[in-house]
Amino acid sequence: MDKIHLKSPKNWINDPNGFIYYKGKYHLFYQHFPYEPRWGTMHWGHAVSNDLVSWEHKDIALFPSKSADRNGCFSGSAVEYDGKMYIYYTGVRYLTENPEDIHTCPGDNFASSQMMLISGDGESFDNMNQKSTVVEPVEDPSIGCRSHTRDPKVWRGKNAWYMVVGSTSGEKGRLLFYRSADLVNWEYVNYALRDDLGRMWECPDYFEVDGAQVLMVSPMGISERRYHDLSVCMTVDFDEERCEMKIPDKYNMLDYGLDLYAPQSTTDAAGRRVLVAWARMPEPDDRGRNGMFCIPRIVNVKNGHIYFSPHPDIEKQFSRRIRDISAADKAGYCVSLDIKDGEHVDIGGYMIERAGQKIRADRSKVFRNHNEIRTVFETPEISGNIHLDIYVDENLIETYINNGEYVLSNIVYDLKKYVRADGDCEIYTLAGGKENEKI
Ligand code: FRU
Image 1: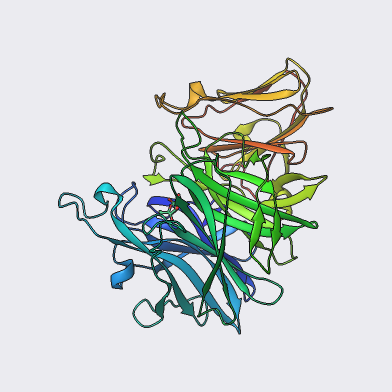
Image 2: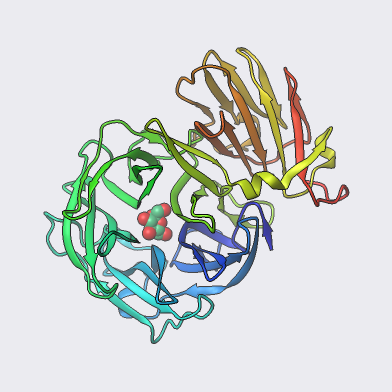
């Protein structure tokens, strides 16, 4: 059982997949390499939750079993129809083999098919009899790429089902849109692009919230410095009938700590839009688990700006006020404060400061020696007062600024057990936590 943050039971986790509220439970699948704490032949791990707070680990749901997915079940999504769970994912088949490592593909020479698996109950996944290919690998390079077309996100539109996948053509990222009347037969409709944002687009997610149309996408190669691939979000203009998406110049980072990647959203039991994302880790945690998910975040759009705030069911958990973190539950604690210009908060060696109207974070003392990855971060300019809610886990610190106007989250290692703030701060931990279950 994991609380607040989901990790794989062991070894490797990357993108969240198939996130859905189905028959009264949340299902969260994830890209998983079960054998080592590194990326390799992808399976779908699976966890379920009643409340987005506690996660119960289940058996692996999807694994390679067909020629088209023999080298991996890549990312995808799930929808409910007629009581069944329809899972869409990308099946990968390597066309060249690496004799020394069958889990990687030399020279990107592989074929990607969009595939489906139907589960009658969200508990059993018949990998032998319930899988099919719904979109063959793209053969026309002016539309997309045979290998780099992946991560189907499916949703119910006004009159049909829609699928968006990430792709590339001429070294520029793009989206491909498909439509279906029955979830089984899919036709290609259109593409959309912005030609100055990365060479390939991964994990697109499109939804409407607060009357706005939102695109989240993870373009590859948009940064000189590691991580090179970063997730962005923006409001777009989408004509469903023609699958025409106008992608604006203006976008925001999903998260200004730049560790989070490949977010995926669904609607929660109350109809709110909620997302999770993968927090990339340069090395496994102390129990050999590499990668984890952020706190489920609610998405809202106000005045054209996209907000990400902790899910209220998570917020509610942090209700026991403590004086210092030696009384914190091992699922973590939350530090709340108003921060004035020039003030600092030091979370066990992770430094957060306000410099003018920006929030800066510096993890250099709590990141071991991974100097090839950024250690210093900052938000855009924020107007007015600045309030911080900082959720601290032993490996992930998430700083929500002004109720989610911006979020800055970072992976850390070897945090010390103190909090020092220039101004007044309040510290909360889990309501039901035991005092002696220390972080
Ligand atoms: C993003 C990604 C996806 C792909 C998956 C493979 O992190 O590269 O595009 O489906 O991971 O694990």
